[in-house]
Length: 148
Image 1 (cartoon, rainbow, N blue to C red):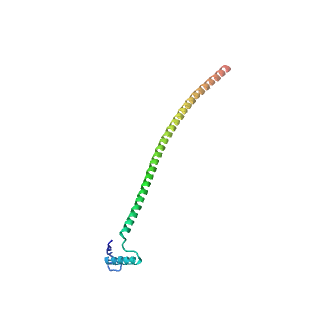
Image 2: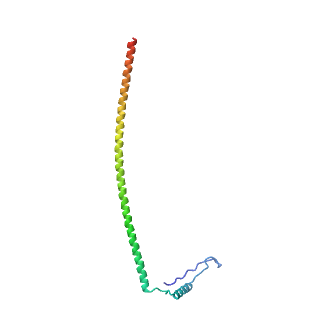
Image 3: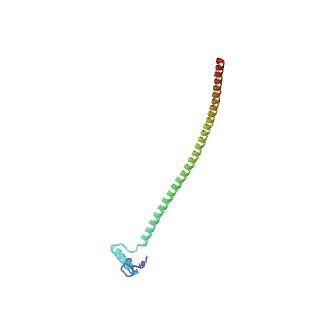
């Protein structure tokens, strides 16, 4: 990989300010050459052999394939979870509708029973009023008959 030159940064106009450190193309080449010499001295060659590069690429590809397989498995699991959640939601909605219908039917029967009780109370009240009127009439007749 060829070395790249760094762009000069503009610093303070008078010099000596922030951004004055300027690396040139030749400076980078010198640094890279020094690093390469040091690696060769330590027994690490500057360039990897073709076989090493191929092995590294194969290893990288193998790792990528494993990652892709793992991600596919995770996606399958997520799809399964989503489907199960949909089914549970659908079942929950159906159950709520059924409960709602049952509750509605129960409420309707309770209302009918309340109306029936209300009607019975009206009738009892009417009968009570009639009974009271009859009792009142009888007591008035007795007074009239007894007092007369």
